[in-house]
Length: 205
Image (cartoon, rainbow, N blue to C red):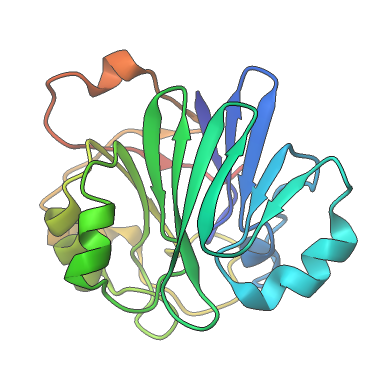
């Protein structure tokens, strides 16, 4: 499986001929390009984007924007309601579990953390006190969930039109020094075997 990042909470998962995109409007709202709308599955964590998504996505895309359990092309998606407008997801693709937090604004309850307890990869916003989790809030949540692989999002990058923290603030909270920065992440089940938590930082696509 390959994972691409488009800035903010926008991601793409690619496995063979199957594509899942996550929050394509998140980067677009802050003047970043974002992914195109061609995909097999699209996940929206922000309910405010649903009306526009129904116009932009073609019928061949399975659009998910609400809590529930879904199975599409042997991929499983579990939507978990956070509040009136926000849903987070647990995605199972290639036997790898991905926690998708979108632009999460507040820390999660113990009950929801338990539902994410066995995630392999966690996509977590780390860099904006006004819009999403602050670096220290993100670091605490990561320690509670304990993913095998962490991919941060929603921090300051070139072209971003809103205020955001530098990724360096998050590095300090996590005690990280010079993690490798990739254009895309390739993850297999072998990468998850008997290893300490690894952080993957992605360049925006």
